Structure formats: C-alpha cells, structure tokens
Amino acid sequence: MESGEIKADVAVVGAGVIGVCVALELSSRGYEVVLLDRRGPAAGCSYGNAGFICPSHVVPLAAPGVIAKVLKWMGRPDSPFYLSPARVPAMAGWLLSFARHCNPEHVRHSMRPLADLLMRSRALYDAFDEKVGGFGYERRGILKVFKTEKGFDEGRAEAAMVRETGQPTLEVDRVGLERLVPETPIEARGGILYPEDAHLDPAAFVRKAFSVLESRGVRTVNAVEVEGVRLAGGRAESLSARGVSVRAKQFVLAAGAWTVDLARRCGWRIALVPAKGYSLTRPAPVGAPALPLLLAEAKVAVTPMAGQLRYAGTLELAGFDERLDARRLGAIADAVPRYLPKLAPPQEAETEKWCGFRPCTPDGLPLIGLLPGVENLYIAAGHAMIGMAAAPGTGLLLAQLMAGKEPYTNTSAFDPARFCRRR
Ligand SMILES: Cc1cc2nc3c(=O)[nH]c(=O)nc-3n(C[C@H](O)[C@H](O)[C@H](O)COP(=O)(O)OP(=O)(O)OC[C@H]3O[C@@H](n4cnc5c(N)ncnc54)[C@H](O)[C@@H]3O)c2cc1C
Image (cartoon, rainbow, N blue to C red):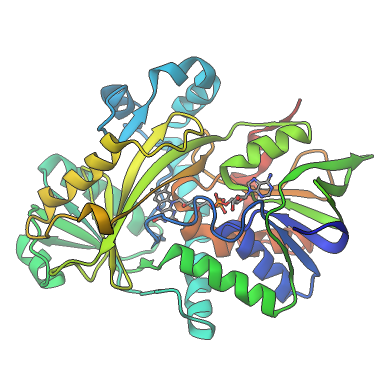
C-alpha cells in the first residue's frame, strides 16, 4: 500500500481498459502519469467480457425496438435483457431518458461519431498488436448468426447501417456458414460476417498495457481507493485517498460504472447506471469455432480465447449486485447448444463464471471530455457494451482534448455535459 504525496502531470483513476488506454496515450506524449486503482489492472468489467473489437457496433444501446423488448422480458430472470421491477422507482429518471433516446434520429446522429471512435480504436489495436502483442488479438471478423427469419431481417437492416459508415458486410446462407466455420456445425438460417471486426483476450490486453506503462516509468498505485477530488476555484487540485494524496495538473476519472460514486463525492450527479452481464469460460471443446460468433436472438457472444471458449451475455439492470445468479448463467449456457448443437456441454469444475458491470448512459454513448465547470477534471466512462472496442480511440481523443489539439472526430456526441450536473 502506497502512502505520502505523489506529484504528476496527470492522475488517472481506474486501471480498466479505459484508464490504461488513456494512460498509454498520455505517457507516449511525454506526460508524467500516475494511474490508480483500488484493486489492480482489469479488476472490473474489463476482465471477463467477450473481447469483441467491433467497429460494426455503430448502433447505440438506445435504439428503436429496445423498449418493447425490455417490457416483454421485464421480470423474467432467464431473458437476455432483465430489468428488476424493484429497481424501476430508483431508476425512473434514467429509464425515461433512455426511452426518449430510443428513436431513429438518435441512431442516425450517433452512427458517425461511433464509427470514427471504433474504427480509430481498431487501427490502434492493430498497431499495438504489431508492436507489443501477446493478448490474443486476431483480425478474423465477427459472424452474427440468425435462427429466425425475423432476426435475420433485423440483422440485414443493421448491416445496411454498418455499410453506410463505409464498412463491408457479407451475408451468408447455411452453406456459407459451413464454409466460414467448417470446424463447427451451426444450426441457423444464415449469418452476417463483419470482416472489419476483431477479438482479443480482454484481461490479457489490460495487463499487457499495464506492464508497458510500468516499463515506461508510469507510476501505478494499486489497492488504493480514491475517495474524492479536492477542488478550488474551478480547478481540481488533488485526489484524496486513505494515506495518499495525489497532486496533478490534470485529472481523469475512468472508474467504469463506479465513476458515478466518485463524481458524486466531488459534487456531480451523473446519469450512469451499472448494467450487469455474465460470462462462462471453459477449455475449448472439440469442434469449437475459430471465429467469434454472436448468437443473434439469444444475444450471446461466443469467443475463442487461447485454448478457451467464452460465452458472454445478458444485460441486467439491477444495481451493483455482485452475486452470480445461476438462472442467468444457465440461460447463457442453454442458448449455446441451440445454435451449436455438437459442442460438448461445459463441465462445472473447469468453467470460470464471472459477472461485470457495464457503465451505461441513457443515450448509449460514452462520456469523454471535461466535467462541466472545471478546467482540468476529465471523465472517460459510460462505454456500456463497447468499452473494449472503443478504449484506444477514447485515450487518443482525451489526449487531443487535453493538449488543445483538433480531435479526430466531432466530440459533441460524447460531451459529458449531456448527463453531468452539479449537485
Ligand atoms: C458480459 C459482458 C460482455 C462484454 N463484451 C464486450 C465486448 O465484447 N466488447 C466490448 O467492447 N465491450 C464489452 N463489454 C463492455 C466492457 O467490458 C466495458 O465497457 C469496459 O470493460 C469498461 O471499461 P472501464 O475501464 O470503463 O471500466 P472497468 O473495467 O470496470 O474499470 C474500472 C476500474 O476502476 C476501478 N475503480 C473504481 N472505483 C475506484 C475508486 N474509487 N478508486 C480507485 N479505483 C477505482 C475499478 O477497480 C476498476 O478496475 C462487455 C461487458 C460485459 C459485462
């Protein structure tokens, strides 16, 4: 455990994928950075996720049709999207705002900035893999497979939007599925391949990036919970934590879903809620797919990861409840054989079960930029389902904003002022 006073150019709170990518970008530009985490690298949502690096995810979480699905599934513990009825009163404001954003105009307005963020991130992953490697990064694309004609039609409409952002897509029938994934029989009508997508082992990436930061001389402080940020005259002065004080010229809050607590202690109310998801990781069975798959109707991701196979899914709005709900894990495990009937079921003893909290804003877009009213306190959080896919581009954007340089995309869609208010 660290103690005493630390001085730096920039203090970054949170060593998840967002915090490490912000620190990588800033340290490569010569900033003296200190990175703090209450546990250590990849201790939060960046550990057990599906590892999709998906420029194709240009449609935000808040999109037409989502509310109808939420209402249909409400209270059903085995559904892919679960809203706990008990949480509705406490979340009413967030839910209303989310519902207001579920419209075609919002999707149109979001697609370009999301595509820029995601494409830039993918390019930065390519470069980091070439230079550093060792985190299971593969550029094979992601294949979304459909069991129903309705699901396939929805998939085709989504693919048309992805093409509008300049990315190719490839629709295949049953025979095409066999050609793309000959090692794994797939029980589906067909699929859509997103060739620009990639995948990686998320915890391996965060740990590798963390070790690169340490080799560059970045000060990393683990097992220290940041309690707040001291402000004076519209500027942040220092971070307070038990036994440690960090003075810096600039500060970045990248504490994932917990950014809301940290910001509250500094006097801001942020519309950010935790959306819990689960994964099961098993040794790869015979006939495991070499290509990452998205089982469309079940909303389950299946990702090959260095001799293992990970199943990930569900989005549960039920607060910060860290319990592993056997019904929800069971729903993910049961969905896989409906699409991949020849895979042997996972063995309980050799399966790692995990849950994590996606940080979600009401419009499904991240918060990247200055907190309103403070000249040196930034936020980089709220990446929901695309935190892995958007992290390097988020680091670059923040570094450009901090240096007063022209950002590579229009940042207004990500402006924290959308959902951050002084209390
Ligand atoms: C089941 C599932 C599947 C997913 N699949 C994908 C995918 O395929 N592709 C994709 O792009 N995204 C995916 N996601 C989303 C992705 O995991 C998140 O968007 C991303 O990990 C968020 O990263 P983060 O750095 O913001 O937060 P986190 O990884 O949660 O990191 C926050 C860090 O802050 C630290 N912290 C918190 N409070 C404090 C404090 N007060 N002081 C010090 N430290 C603090 C925590 O210890 C933690 O290490 C998935 C999520 C889930 C749940």
